[in-house]
Length: 482
Image (cartoon, rainbow, N blue to C red; front, top):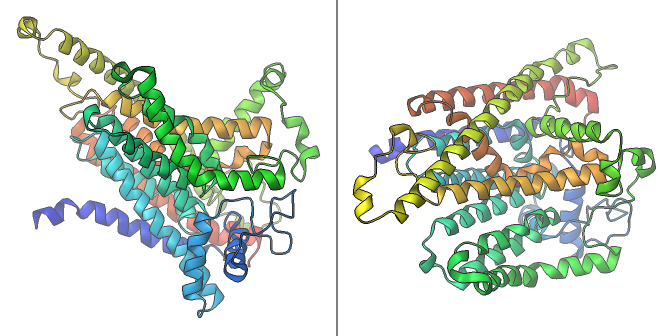
């Protein structure tokens, strides 16, 4: 009975998340999710033709007659195609809603991975794992991803799983790791690559994780572990990139001459030197930072305070400002979280140096060591901060930084519309959630953690209500039904 009550908050968060995802599922008109008709056309093509859709529209990277988004690797769509085959006796609308529900299932599993990841890094803090899971669960943008047909739910789940396993690798005694361990990590990364090509952004993590135990293994040992990671990934995923290169002449599906390129060419830089020497470089950089920030928090409602609502009936336009207040609140919370994250990393670095010094001064000198002050016991108020805490946190930071700077490169050098593509950061949503919540909780005593978690969850739930109102009375009328 006690064990069941212990996990009751976890079950509650998962249940509320899934119910919300189903509400979004039936609120967002079918075919109105990001590229949703093109993903569904891909699935139908696989079922009907038993082959990958050809890329015969080079500008849009699609199959010309159906619009199937053929530039994407097939794994997520193959899974959808299996579901479609099993359900094809049902009406088409019902199949689409069920495939959307599959997205919610995958995102629910992602929440469990987020919970385990946080517990792995902060095993003594009982509140933080639940806080991170609840924060991710109630993000309006995450709800969007969980309620439409796309490749993103599977990509996010697998990428989150890889991050968790990499953190476990850092926290596992070096002697217990075998070369096959890095091989399995590489195999998982290969599976991620045939889910979506944007996972190339995380390629450096293989070399980073192989550097664990550098002092003992040396360069040769690092090279062996690096090869053990990348070889399985290449075996699993290289066929897709070779096929794509043979068709398009590029390794990556980003088309540098997309439709409308000439109209936006003045916003694109052709090299780093070109960007740094532009007079409007800071303005373009800020355009990316601000736009991605807004999009990350709520693509369901866009949340753009500058968006004009001309042509929308007054009663419907009145719903739009409901979400702006939440965006401003989370802008302030993000600033607070960044401060807390700096504090957290600073404390962890000091503890890491202290523990290193303590190990070096063992023996007779250890008896003369002064006890650490209570506030230095742990960066988040829990006992037993381990030496692997700092590498684990830095790995989480690197995971998010890689995808963020990849999107920045896309916005500044390829497609200026990338500044509205916050969902491209969600493959690292577990890292984002952990860093955001850990930064907030690092600034308050541990006895307040539960209160802050409940308050944050309630605010996010209210934001979701505002988003649903916004969808019903503003976005859907604005963009049209069907």
